[in-house]
Picture (tube, rainbow, N blue to C red):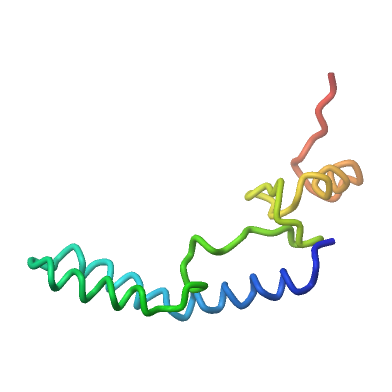
Amino acid sequence: MARKSLIERDKKRKQLELKYHLIRRSSKKEIGKAPLLSDKWKIYEKLQSLPRNSAPTRLRRRCFVTGRPRANYRYFGLSGHILREMVQACLLPGATRSSW
């Protein structure tokens, strides 16, 4: 189980990303349309003034059950060992165990 503080920190980052998503997207479009370099610098300064944790690259995908940040499967949203336990318990329809 991941520490609660790290999970809560990721939740706050997700909220910040949603809050500033439109501002970030519109300013990036403006950069492409700006003809002068000085105008682009002003827009870059606007982007730099946004909170650092509002960047989408700062988000971390975590397991829904344990909060584990590594070995996550996007399709299921679970970490590897939880996925294996759920498949063995027949809790995931359509998932089969491999047999060698």
